[in-house]
Length: 560
Image (tube, rainbow, N blue to C red; front, side):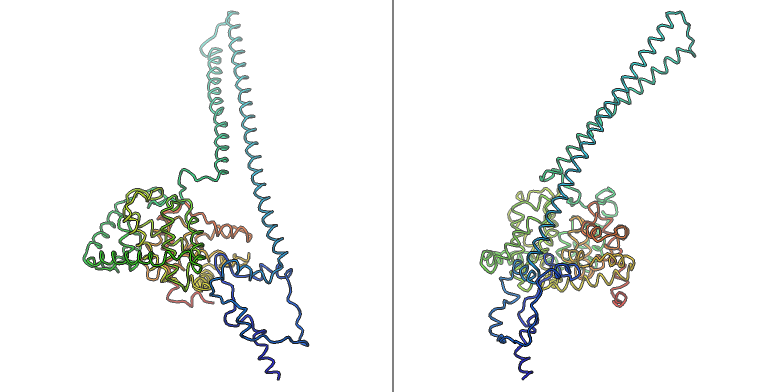
């Protein structure tokens, strides 16, 4: 009887393990639940009612359980439902009070910062006015002294006092000359403090206004140039360009040789065709390329006709809505990506990919992966810089070609890392764990420092894996990085791990200087790379290759 009772109570006792039960999806929007960070909420939350073994309730049948349980893959499982499930174990009152307190503290901090800036500006203006008044008084005193000396000299001459060249006459010349010099120095800064204050006030007003800056920030510039300001095309780069052209001009391109050349960077002029070859989008045989391009482009626009009209259907509208929300957030500093026609292209690319890959569907972060391909393939048709380029000036056929090529190359990339975006994102989980083990072997002091302040690798490295470091580097650096990823076997799926390890160790000094959790997280999520160029990326890749050479073929080296 007891065994039968246990069988009857199986579904109630093991409700968390039954097929179809909803499990939390870890991702950028829903990081894993950490009991250490949320201990206070759990303590204050609703505790489960005590068990009453003396009065067993009627067992729930599997049919009844199935009827009241939604499967984890149902269309209705959107972000709101996941949040509602996560909040079931928490006291709603405590959650709301905590949220309101965070918002209130943030508002107070912003207001305090605004007041501090205003007070500082007023102090600077007062100091400037005091300096101007003091200088004017000093100038007036000097003029009075000069007049007194001239008057005294005149009295001496009237009294018949004879001056010699080395005597009083020379002394009279000296003060006069000095006074003129002093006067010129005092005049110079009279206008400059006011100008400085005016410039500071203008800068403060400019920072407070939420308008798009007329000058594109350095982080958004995509020119292939080094931060040292060297010429765009050196003798070495010209020689490398000739090697690329000779290799690509042959009837059958040697892809292995092309990978060797591309590892150190691809010249802008041949990057579009090289990326298409290295990604497997184009065949090595030159005669077949045009027919393959035409066929693949027609196939893509066949998908558009077949699927795109279904974006407003009930079972696809959630996917399209999320894509529609994420597209304007893609590289907001670059005007190119804020053009309506470009955003429509991205929407079509992402929606078609999501429909054709139902195992993962669309996941936030995939939208970033389109931008490097799009920029590179726009470069194929223009000579000027792309940041402010108006794509509507291109022919419609050219825009269609760029869209189709971007779709297929992005698809090739995602085919190798699709487990990063499937249910529960297991690929990212494994890579973050491998990163932690690798760093613990490379730099144990750095690893222990982050452990000491309870910084989990998943808290900052999830984005590194999900977006392939695109949120950490300027787009121009991402394009250079992808030159090597395209040339490296399993570059996006395997070599990227070592790049992330080298990237973390690169900031060792800055990380060790931070002495609290908040400071470490702010640093790791806002690393100062806006001035990076080809030189910095090349050094990063060289260090990543060294790590791969040391650890890739000996995985036990980074396992404890």
